[in-house]
Length: 372
Image (cartoon, rainbow, N blue to C red; front, side, top):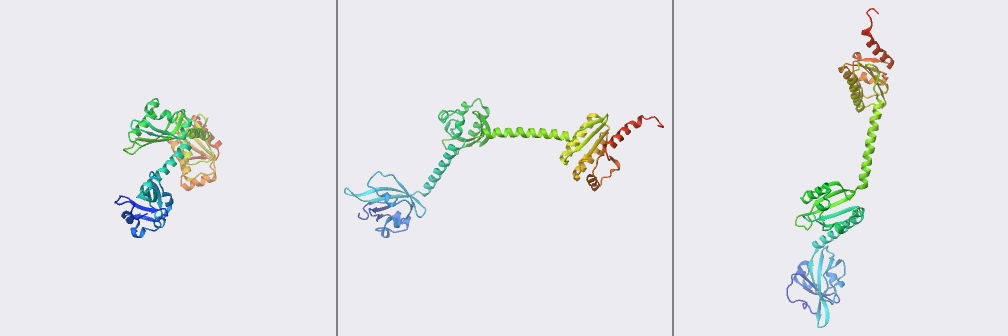
């Protein structure tokens, strides 16, 4: 092929021409600027030597047809070029090809990212219990897809072209949810629809798009049922714990005006607070004159708990009742002494029996005749 015979005018593309042996015959000014070689240096050399490829083969561009679609080649320098190829003829014989190239690196990067995003979306939609939708500005479904639809009675064909604001008019939560998204407010909600529970996101699309809103709904029916079951179990446990606490600190009216509260088990600040509340309410309700706190069932308390026990006795006194401590173990006594509490103002007995005798004596005292 004669040099320069491919074109005799300037073109807004890189022009690289080569013969059947892949020797360069044409190399225009744009090729010189893009690839850093003059036409004189390029002509006669192999195109694969001058323009090494990261993938593909220059031989694939050889053609004798005039309707070959453009080809993308990744060059070794990291750029992607789109080459449009035309055969060069001498008479009826093809003697070479003229390749018109444009740097499409940015477009190729965008296309690869779009392809990857499409693949990821398809993998998620086809394998997870999802429903993905796109809406027009009036709410009409433009796209509906996802494995999550299999658990419902609807198909994409039944939904595309329909308006969910009409379809789900009997579900105010769904309608309001969609309206907020169409108004431009990103929204997330767990909602019941089509007999299932969905964790749904409504995300407004960027302006000037065919879709005004995109939504993704994950079927969480099973986890929602498990959550409700777990919540019911926790509520049952809380009720059982309340019963256990009440049983472990019962308030017994052993005599008219005499209450006994035996304290059993582990006692901490939270429990003593509950004990105080229960005791004071009982004192106020029964108008009792004596409140006996029997500590026989506990051996050790911390300083905060000891403070609460002392505070209970003082609070009972404010309600007009005499507080009495019984069954104090040596460890508890040591803690109370460490606090520096003066016990001369408190009634303390070694046993519950002694405390009851004290209460009966105090109640009988005023009724005894003088001198007896």
